[in-house]
Image 1 (spheres, helix red, strand yellow):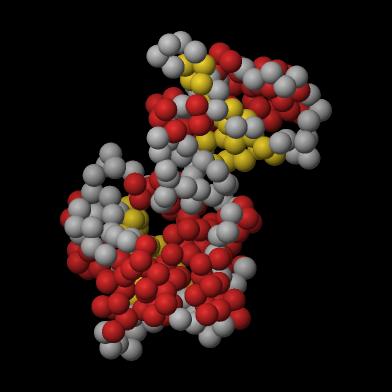
Image 2 (image 1 turned 135 degrees about the vertical axis):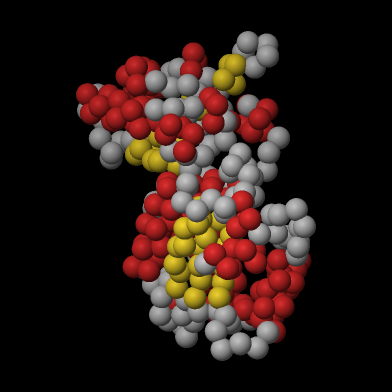
Length: 287
């Protein structure tokens, strides 16, 4: 059984790590080791105002405190009785035990954030287990840059800014531009401090960013990448650094990736939070 603990910035601020310590103590007291129950840190699960959040076997618990840990272990994990008082309640006062029972989640289809809340962002093995790095392996094995561009075009993927510029088109422009050295840049800066789009991906699913940059680099002919992140996002920077290190260790970054002639590496560059650096030409100048 796996116990998912939201370790997004919001839940950490509201005491998630204290809840984790209490859960581990309760599990140890109950004689339940990591063999029986695996505790997994995840990225942001969504409803930050309801944190700390814990998910056990599909059951979603909100506003969990360290004092609730013993009951979760004894009632849910040992006796098989979910803790109703920690579940979200609907307007009719009835509990909504699982995520699919909660209207906030039921009406969503997560795309960019589909792994957030599901996997440990610090575990490359978790990412690979949900088909991570398969897209990169496919592009390298087939060697078809044109095919990759056509797939991007068919997907309809666009930039996440206001212009909604088609991603395949930007890649194609860069690919056709003659240059001895090309760079792949990731804009992880957010001028709006309340947006948290980029921060959520960086904190909760950093390997997806690395894989996406690798695919883009392969298509456009780049060997060096930079991720530009504002220094006010220390958790995002820390998790991305760890993910880059693990990707290098497994041959997914660096020289001759996956035994091919493709070489690509990444660096993190931290900005000072200037609003204008969310715009790409200012970002390039800052780097």
